[in-house]
Length: 412
Picture 1 (cartoon, rainbow, N blue to C red):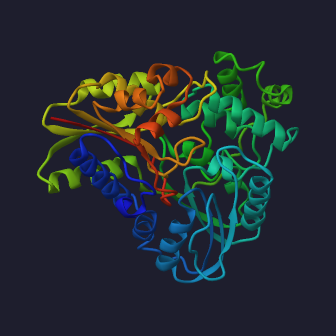
Picture 2: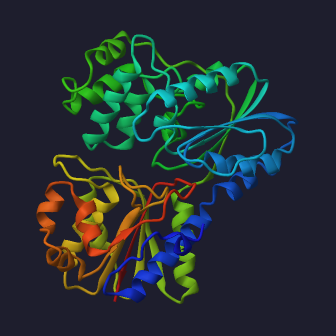
């Protein structure tokens, strides 16, 4: 994907040349994380004969295009994703809800279980976003129970490992249960959007689950969320139905956030800019992580960070973790010759139409001149309106991939 061609509106910051550099780097990152190419490469040595493809996640359609080319003989294809996109002829496409599951998500989840149960040779293509896109509530729970719990988890600022530990044990699909339903041999190809093992990607529907219901209950107790979730959730977790034991099968990680970051770094080097990948494991509260990331940056080079931070939603505003990070950075670097970008590689940051933002030393003042107090906006989790007023948002629409977040710091 060429990000520069996909921008719905230009990013307006004072340091225009650095903004152009950052956008070119982000575009190169998306190319490096291209799901079609990486899936085709992962399946290049396919020798198993005809197969069924079951694809789940934001990158599902592109992964299917790559897999179809590599496999050749495909008996049936089912794609569950969050947007319509070109798919091979005859493929079944179900567009569902993200980040909160709804009735379309449950329909898709049941279709995946049905298809897995009647196919002999199945290739699962799993990418980020799958936790919400397909869901079948565990026995004793309704879809409303599960959706309400999702909202609580996402607003509480939990790490993705904690969130997916809970989600895995509220589902008849996740935590290896989709693989347990499969009738024959399986292979899983993953595009990773998280820090941690394969069980965290889309809550691990086709890989062994290393946690137990008691671990999920412990997350809710430790985080003080037992009164916020439906009482049936606590009852189901306390009953302790363990995840299934599933047969060993091959799991391939086709691409991830580190590969995307290195693609961005290659673009900086191509432009004769010094740079380094500081960490592929960025995590923690977004505002705290911003302060740390800015402290790691070196003059005269670009610094990259890949991973996924969190935001505890306390205000009534609108935004996402990358917009929250960018607004916090704008305050830290005010009147300094530094550019900061925070970008969700799926093209969607929180419940907004933006993927993130690019800010520099003039952004905070631009927000004030638009009549918005940036400190108040940050406290109210209203980064979207503040950054929109400054012209700092990156709007590109869904990218067709999802390998977590990429932050870039460019200083003079």
